Length: 496
Image 1 (cartoon, helix red, strand yellow):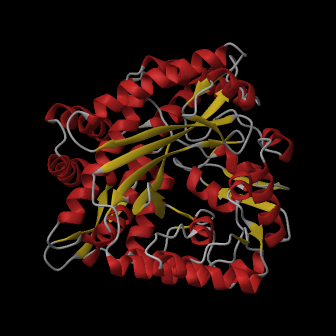
Image 2 (cartoon, helix red, strand yellow):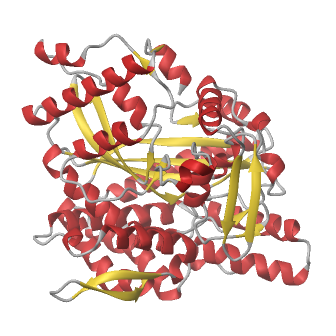
């Protein structure tokens, strides 16, 4: 982040000037929304996938610079730690055989990247948390050598004023203290973008929030950290705790964390940006010279850089994004719920489920969020993270909208998958693509399996043969990578 800041002409500002610029940016965004100057809808979606580097034994490899030098593609970029890289897929129109096109692009790109990594003794593992990570791997010395990561680490620790504390109580219990934000690097995710008009933004964001629980339940793939079996999708809780700027007394007072589900349904994208300014102190109090209101008065489009920089340091699971492309502003919803992997087919099945479901719910004449309390959506997210495919969701039933307890797999299979299919039809997705990728989600629900379930079952089988936990995790990770490279979706994998 620091590199981008310096290149854009930012400079450090005192608190008063920075707050004034943020308020100007909010006013600028409000005027843009009122003026209806945003890009017309083009049904564009995009993907980012964070990846791990491991050696032939399954242990992490701290060499992302060497691997990226070998790959030599702008589609692949550095990430927080030296065992992380990220692949970015160019935006695609949500129509026709888009998922098959994306599958070909991803398989080709990841296969090439894996070959290049192998030349320097590393392999790519697409998983939510690399199971073989140890506490000694997630230390300051193993952060990527980039100014933006150092700056972010220093600012979070300065605001917190004490060590980072992890305390995760799942199948097993983990307590760990860290002197840096390095544990956050264990979290490798799939991020899905959807460009929307201002008038559609609130409905799409609300829909995305409402389905976070089922979404993470069916896609969970992060059950291990530091040799402990924790939540089926440990990554969100780890993310929250590892970059928490709040010391204990502020947590006790109810101050909101940087990694935040939210607390209410919205009516406008402005609601989210205004909450960001109201509730969160600046991690990076940096300003440039743009006067957004003057730019608007002159007929231009402001970049709103302070607002977008601030927004980028608040880790909502569905983040609002403002950007200017070719002189035209646009809005996106960035869905950050899902882990990476296990395979390209699984990633795209998750994507088809998400994009179809969000479209159907946003189009519905009676919005789901009028019947589902926000606190229930938040509780569903926690349940999906903790219990994965075996979670129980609270979901509205009947005309009165009373909540019933429904197993996530049944809810998804019987109610949400038909909605997702209708949503994909509304996008104009090829029926063969629709049926193939939603069929993968259906099979996970039928078999009650996903990446997390496969990892845990395989780990315990190996542990029964040899009580060395790290050896079992390493063996499971090696077989996971082999299965992932073969490309069959995870519900077809046999346990080790």
